[in-house]
Image (cartoon, helix red, strand yellow):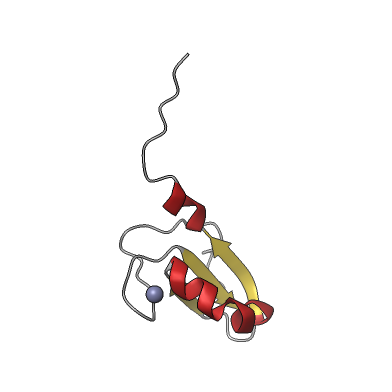
Length: 74
Ligand SMILES: [Zn+2]
């Protein structure tokens, strides 16, 4: 049984599995299909070991640098 989770965006309810902070990276493990969530800090910590094992590495840490609403004015 497969579940379509591929394009789900992370939100404030998603929490880092390590520290409970808001998660900005979602990792799907290739072997088990299990999903792991990490904050920006822990994503960097686990990236060297986990990334080769991941079938998906969904990184939204760029949003951390865009906290302020972008005002587009002409
Ligand atoms: Zn964390």
